Image (cartoon, rainbow, N blue to C red):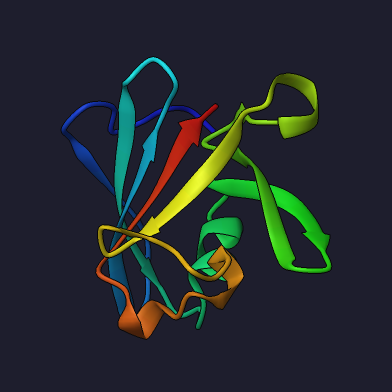
Length: 111
């Protein structure tokens, strides 16, 4: 996945009854922004279906390792993707966030 919509421009992606803003903020401070439309019930399913995130299923749900093609691997370099929903740190994983209740989602690459 390329980093379309970088720094300020939002790219429209998908189709469906739910719409939310999605931002990926990278280690260098740049970001990619999308307006996502989907019929998926959860944000995790929507972002996976559109190829915006990739990860591994584990005991606690989806562990997101790639956002917009950028890898974060805590075991390798102590980086991870932090999830924010409606401007606040999420208390649940991305596959537990309901599209119907979401205005904005952000993944931030942190160390």
